[in-house]
Length: 359
Image (cartoon, rainbow, N blue to C red):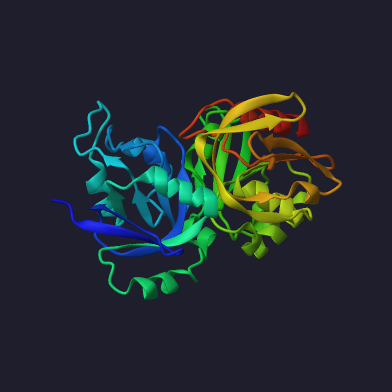
């Protein structure tokens, strides 16, 4: 029998559910994802660092655990909330079950919770803090305890600690990927396009990056408030002066914009899921994209040396920027698409073409 457990929100509401995964209390920032598939990619996405994630799709765990689908070495989220947990997975690639995986990773989870009602609260009142616990004792004091929680040291906690090198089968160019909490498939997409890839930690200096003589620079996704990464922003300012072809994704997009004088803001409840519409302004086409972010570049703050290239189809927020004085562009969504639609994978080809034209 699963143990009773509770999710207490900072507004005083609470939900009763059943526990699985690791047995421990935890506090985090409550967010939701609308992805209908790819729960393993969600669990291993470093951008969820410090957060408690609600899956709006009701059935989770049905195809088990498949390590080759992981997007990082280990989960970075604080806890996992689902409606129905499948305890008997069935898939020819399955190598384990969700409960065992979460236990080994130290991630607590809840099931048998009304995730629709919980998600509606987040949509209406915005992202808020919460605590997964096993008792409602001292409820009022717990609510006060969780209010000050803040996601901190997000990038330093998820970036690689050491430089890594990946060789392409037929290398034609070299790319440096700055890891702010990168998903694995960003690197895969570059390597399969003939790029020798050097992955460097988030705090690598501009001088160290330039010493690698890269043909292009890739700025990865990552968690947390982009404005906290002061040193990384200064590093990008120096790199931009060298006019090296640069492509930024998610947090990398935000950091590049901040380095050029733009501003960012925290969204009411963010964009998380594999079904987010992004409209390309130049072509008037709408692409369905994978997204995971709680912050956005403010449209009106985009500097004179840049133009907004994509906007979100739902709320009009900035989803992409093209720079006019240097070979650089960035997008807020995830063209590497793990998990999610591959509609915008062509952006990697655009980056490759930019590199080749710049040689």
